[in-house]
Image 1 (cartoon, rainbow, N blue to C red):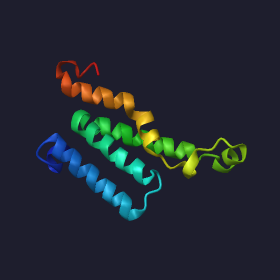
Image 2: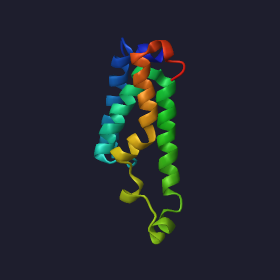
Image 3: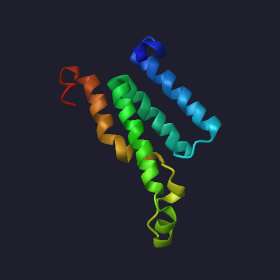
Image 4: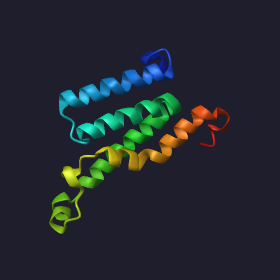
Length: 120
């Protein structure tokens, strides 16, 4: 499985994958997240991969990419109206957790109460 290829346990895989992606983002100068947003996204990514596996993690990453693209649609028009997202659309910690807080609580709840994981 993909998780096994990344590390022996889900948390090891989560740490390996998210650390590598965060480092790559820093080196490549990614433009979706502020530096603190990247740190918070790393923590979210580790939590999601370790609890929900690649499916939950992938869903969240796709949501981040889609949200970043939508934010930039008609950016100049939004800026003229004064309704544009700040920082040129880069996501900060408040955006990361604002979008993912409920999912993260479910992920952590599945660790505490594994018998209810399918409901979370």
